[in-house]
Structures are given as C-alpha cells and as structure tokens.
Image 1 (cartoon, rainbow, N blue to C red):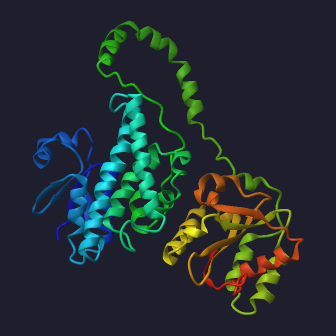
Image 2: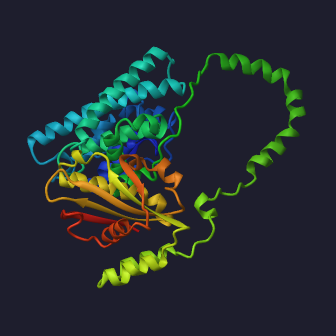
Image 3: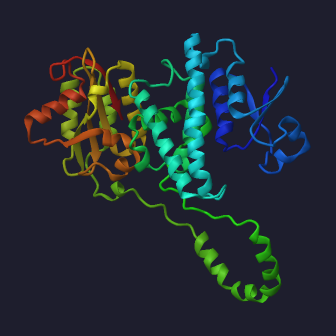
Length: 420
C-alpha cells in the first residue's frame, strides 16, 4: 500500500490524532514535506483537496479526506482487525460517543477559553466564564467515568482515547494549569498514563504541563499598517542612535547561562551510593533478608537520606484490580524525574476489593524533594509519613516492604512494584 500523505503542521494536535492511530494499526503515514501553515494550505492544489483551506488533510490513493476525526477514523479502519474500534457493536457505539464528547464538550470549550487569550478572537470575560464552567462540567463527568475505568471503553486504547488525549494535550500544554486540573485527579492520571504510552510518546515527545494561564493579548491588525508607515519615514535617525545599545543587550542575552543545579546535588556528599543499593537489590536472588536487607542497613545514611511510608487516600475507589495496578504503574512512570535521587516499593494489598495501595520511598535529603511534589501530581493522592528508624516496629515494616513479605500486615499481596 502506498504511503498516505498528511498535510498539516508537525505540532498540530489534530495531526497527532492520525499519526498516533497509524502507530497502533501499523499504517504508514507521512507528513507532507515543507508544509507551511498559511502558505501551503492556500495553494490551488491544496484548495482542491479542502476548499476552505483547513488542516489537516489526508491524501489517499482514492482521494482526499479532511476533518481530523474523519481522517483518524479512516486510518483506524484500514486494517481488518479494528483494534481501535472495540470488539462489539456496543463498544463501537461507545467509542463514537466519547469521540463526540471529546470534540463537543472538551475541545470546543478549551478553544473557547484559550483562543481569545492569544488574540485569535475577541476576548469577552462572560464568554470565558461560560467556557470554563462548561469545561469543568465536562471534566467532572469524565473524572467520574475514569474513577473506575483505565480507558474510555474496554480494557485497552481505542480511537476515543487517542482523540480525547490529543484534545486534552492542547489544554494541558497551554492553559490547564495544575491548580485547575487537580480538581480532576482521575483525568490527570488518565492523561499522563496515555501520553507516556510508547505510541503516544513517539508522536508527542516529552509532554509538560503549562505553568500559567496565558495573559490576554489584544491583536489590533487593522491599526498596525497605519502606525508603521509614518514611523518608517520619521524615525530612521532615532533607530541609528539606539543601535549601539542593542548589541550589548543581545550579547547579554546570547551569553550561555549555567544550567541550574538540582538542590539535592548541593547537599553534602553521602557515604550511601544509591546505585550500589539498587544493584544489590536487583542481584540478590536468595537469602534476601540476610543479604539485601542487611546490606541496605549497612549502607543507609540517615543524615543524607530519609525513608517515607505512603498510603493512598482513596483506597475505597480501588474496586477493579487492573485499574488499581495501572494507577500504580502510572505513578511510577511519572516518578522517573526522581530516579537519580530515589528508590521505592509500591504494594497493592488484598485478595478482594477494595485493594489497598501502600508504599515505601527512600529519598535523598531529609524531606520529600520539592521538585517531585511540584511535578508529580500523584504525590498529593497519598498520605506521607516519615519513618522513625529508632522505632523497631517501623524498621521491620521497612524490611517487609523491601522484600515483599507476605502476608503483609495480615493480607495477601496482589502485586509489588519496584522503582529503582
């Protein structure tokens, strides 16, 4: 089959829908080379494919397809197994339902909030308030659904997840700050789990949540030509006078700035080498208590490191085993930023729901690192308690969590995961 050509920007979230779907179904889709928004989409050739000049457009051997959701649907169905469309008629209908929801309730309201702030439409505070209210209502409904579901439909990624995640990406990357999304923890968990899946990450790259809502920009395009023409005649001498100052400013801006060090790298050196402990843990296959646990306490530096217990605050929600396991797995993925400074064990406990989630973490320093608290939203979903190693009962609990002792506190282990 000849490769399909997608005309659209490389950073366009609507193009991402098709590119991610193509990764899942194994279809080759190539981006049109040298595509330039505002130029390429105004050519006669492009307007023959989409008369109103919008992107993306998919060029196929059988003719063009426009509208991003339609393009993604087309690509998802190119292979006969339809892995992105569920396994039954009801799942197919539910996938289509969530695609409509993602477009009409999520995407539309994010755009109504975001676009006027960056000058792509008139900014009207009452309209913004209405968009935010409608978006919160939609995210609340989505949060409730995701409280007991890892994915929108069934037990694996479908086209609905791809389209919703791409729409959420626009918001998380540009306007949905942490203080806003923290009201919807299950939506946060879902989004970060999806964008870190290999097929998503290949297209998105590293996703970072925006730190601030963009300030309102007022674009006054009609008045700009009137202002620039007279100034071009009147001010050449003024510009010449100011020129000597600009190289100094430019030189200052271009001077390389040293990369700020992580505060943990500035702590006094510790005799405990974290990588040595991780190797000991990984390589000990027998006599774990006598070798690994003893080795841990021989290495442990109570001044340079601290131990913390964590307990999930919402265990009553952990009614489905695979959802609970995915929740913990997503947490460990998002802790990757702390790999150089931490070791962790996460236990999922119980034979029957609701399952309990408990953990043990070793962190560099005497407190939980602030950058971890700031960047990993899961942290606020747990109660954190510093371990008192002078208390033998707490010390023994540390031992049992490190070695996956069972039964743990009288209950069977459903699973144990290690962060190292």
